[in-house]
Image (cartoon, rainbow over the protein chains, first blue to last red):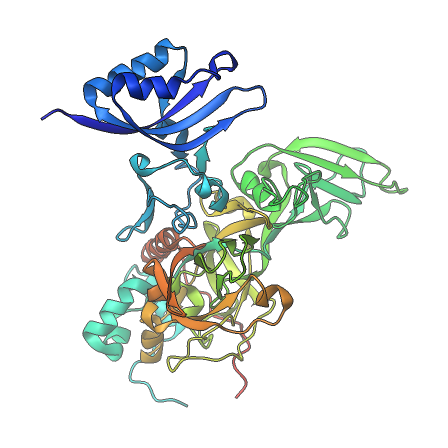
Length: 139
Length: 391
C-alpha cells in the first residue's frame, strides 16, 4: 500500500506572488488534500498560510517542491511553536485552552508535555501562559 | 488537653535531625503511610512531613538597600529596570512590589494588556544575577545633595536584599469560572465565556496550610523553604481569616489562613522565583514555598495525611458576581476532581486548568526533605501561634 503523509505546514508568500492561485494549482496538480488552519495577508500583502496537507508521500514531496519552486518559503508548523523549557514552570494553565490536546499533563510526573505534531498553531497557549514559556511565531 | 499516645517535642525532633536520624517524608508519601499503618504508628515512625507550593503569589516583594553613592542621595523616587519601587522608607532603601508594572507599559489601553515586565520580573532578574538599571531621583538636602543617580547593578552590589511577602500560601483558594458571554482576563488567568474553563490555584494535598489546618505547628518563627533559601514565617499574612466554613477534617472549604514570609533574597534562586504576566490583568511573581510539619503526635499525622479528595473549594463566577463584590458559591468541588482535568457544574463538563505547579510543589517538598535528612535544615519552633478559629 502506498504510504500517505499528513503534515501541518506554514507557507510564507511574498507580495509579488500573493495574487496567484497557488494552493489551487498545488492540490490539482499533485492530488493533495488540504485543510486551512490559519491564514493572514499582512499590510504590505505578504501572506502566511497554515495548512494541513495530506496525500501520498510521493505527491506530498512533489507538492512541497512545487511550492518552493514558486518561490514560497515552506516549513513545518512544529518549527514555529516551542515550549521554552527554561521558562516553563509546568503549572498547566495552558492545558485547558489547547483545542487539540497538544499540551497535556503527564499525570505521573505532573509535567506539562507538548506534542508538536498535534499543535495547530492557534496561539491560545501563548495568551494563557503566565511564565511566557509558549512561543509561537507564525505571523 | 487532648490525650495522645505519641508525644514528641521540637527539641527531640531537631536532635534527631542533627544526628541524621530523623524520618522525613513528603505530604504525598504520608498519605500512604497513614493508610497502611494508622495514624498512631505513623506518628511513631515519622518525624517530619514536608509540604510545598509554587504559584503566582501577589502580595510579594523585596526590600532593597542599594548603598550610598558619592555624593550621597536621598532617593525620593526609584526605578529598577523602569519599574517604580517605593522609596518612602529612608535615603537608599526601597521596596519593589511584585505587581508593579514597568513605567510606560500600555496597561489595558490595548486590551487585553500583555504586561510583559514588572516587579516580579525585576525580582527574578535580581536573583538570576542579571544586570538591573537603577535610577533614583532626589530633591537634594544639605546632607544628601545629589539629585540623580543612575547605574547598573546586580544583586551582589546591593547591601541588602530581603524578600518580604505580606501574604503567601493561601490556605485554599476559589475556583474561577466565567458565566458571561465574553472571554475575560483575570488574576485567575484567562476565562472563556459560558464556563469554557475553570481555573484553580493551590497544590492541594501538598499545600502547607492544608496539612496543618488549625496552625498547630506553623506559626511566627517557623523556618521555611522560601524561593530556594531558608526563610521564616514573619507574621500571620494579610487577610488571614481562620473563621471560615471547614470540613470535618478541619480543612477550610474556602480561602482562609495566610502567611507573611521573609528571607534573604541573595540566597534565593530564579528556579523558585519566576516573574508572571497575567494577560489583561498584570504582573505577579511565582513563589516557591515549602514548610516542614513536625509530627508531634498522632493528630499531626492525621492532618498531614489529608488527600485531594477530602479538600474542597468553592466555585465563583468571575464574569459578574466576583467583580461586583456579590460573589456567591456556584458549587463545591474537590481538588481530586479539579486535578483530573474536568469538573461538572450544573450538568456541564468544564475543563480545569491550574495556576499552581504541582510538579514544582512536589520538587520543593522533596528538596526540603533532603535538606532535613542531611541535617542542613532544622525546625523553627513557633514563637507565637497564628490566630486560630474563634470558638
